Image (cartoon, rainbow, N blue to C red; front, top):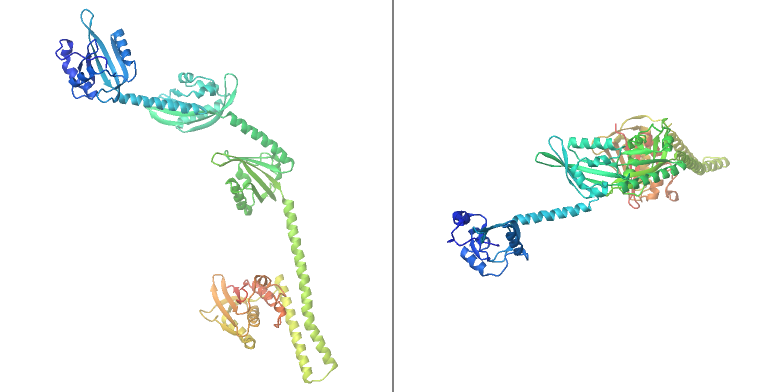
Amino acid sequence: MAAVGEPSNHSGVGDDFSSLFEFLPIGAYRTAPNGLLLRSNPALVGMNGFASEAEQLAVLNASLDDWYVQPGRRQEFRRLLERDGQVVGFESEVRRFCDGHALWVRENAHVVRDAAGRVQYYEGTVEEITERVQARQAAQRSAAQLEQLLALVPGAVYRVVMDADGRRRCTFMSEGVRGLYGIEPAAVLADVDALGRFRHPEDAAQIEATVQTARASESALKGEARVRLDDGTEKWVQVVSRPAPPEDGERVRVGILVDITAQKRVEQALRDNGELWKRALECSGDGVWDWDLDRGAVTLSPRLEALYGYGADDLADDPAALDALTHPADVAAMLQAREDHLAGRVPTYVNEHRVRCKDGQWKWILTRGIVIARDAQGRPRRMIGTHTDITAFKLAEALRVERDRAAAANLAKSQFLSRVSHELRTPLNAVLGFAQLLELEPGDGERQRLWVTHVLSSGRHLLALMDDVLDISSAQTGQLPMAIESLPLQPLVVEVLAMLSSTAAGAAVTVHDDTGQGPPLHLRADRKRLLQVLSNLLSNAIKYNRAGGWVRLRAEAAADGVIVSVADSGPGLDAEQRARLFEPFQRVGAQHGAVPGTGLGLALSRQLVEAMGGTLTVESEPGKGAVFRLQLPAA
């Protein structure tokens, strides 16, 4: 505060505006030429934190403290006032005299002279502008920070405004344009189309069409194009822009220009190397494919197309076109294997599947691939791979399997014949032996009757064995005659139980029949063969049981037919025994026991059941008995 007005009893112009002085919303003052404060209006008194003008005059005129925070600021104010006779818009940071609180003020002052030109006093105004200065400083800091950030952006940031008539002007262009195009920001601000002349001639039309489309649709734009600088240098520039909120009815668009020349050179090097690898792989006889996931296009090598009988332009560059040639049964596994690799769950993509050739034939191929480029989020961008024809290998593998099957069947046949020979020899020797005895000792004594009994028993055993062998053979070749009809289950069970009642009594085994509980069940089967199967299952359950044991028969209706189960309290079977149980001549250890048998009953029973359209299964564990389940179609 450099000068304040005269006392209230001073005569002059100031008295004519005393009300204005008192009620002026900004501070006003008058000072004597020697610096003594003469007047201070209420606004200035309040600004300095005093209760009255008298208090302020007393304090300020007695104080030696400087009003200004910045040293030399008072001298600068006096110098301007003495030189120009006035000071306008003098902004300074000051301290209130009452408490030292810092303020920002703007001062205006002038010199009042008498008729002789002598200085009578100085008058001035003081306006507090602390909030405005702080806002301006904050804006300056923000601008400085923004400038620092823009300096770090690898390119040029710009802002373009378009008025209602379509006229455009660039209102901001960062310093990065200098390094990118070799042009000053001011040149672009002066001419919004200044950068257009750098467009590469081969790309100019495409760029202009893309830009015009984005402007017209008010949509975001992201593109790449070449530019040619004044010195002949060519660069690749990526432009990304989008609409911003309009201002004063004008459309605004902001964007960034980035130099991607290095990236493009790397991509070109990868393509060049990829071509070398493709040619090298094709020399090995493999077809090569290159999948650009960004574009959704795949490039097929001539060798791969020829592998399936296609020409250069026969197959589209859409990956789905090649996938459509995959055998329907192989599609799911192929897509899963590929997705596992694309998602990063497996290091490489490997799959075998069939592909339909142009002539309609199928070829087995081995495809292998790997992702060679991913974006920052890990999403795949490019994948390459090969197709190898493995049809001959697959045919050889199939022939080898068939050969092994034939060898196994031949071995089984040899074993079957060996066992049949062995099984036939035993009763046949008995028949021959006892027949010879009858020949040597004719008569009808007790011993001869015993021999006759043995002969008949052995002959019947031999006949039953031959019948079983013939039945198994007929069932395997599909030549076993069947008379399928609708049959009630309960009468058949009763018939079988009657036939085996003496067998059960002799073995001290109790048979429980629960098949009659519930509504009557009817099934479709051959009556003779079904009696044969039920008799075999019940007979085995009795013979291979324990003294005092039990056998339980149950029946129930199921969604797929009728199920008859035969459970026993026998010794049970382990996993290995269960696996061999239905093979011919497999008695799974019973051959060492006292119970006679050939090992054909269960094998024949399963064959008969399957010939009638049913199934025969077993559940068993050592020491827990066994449960055989016979399932046949319901009537």
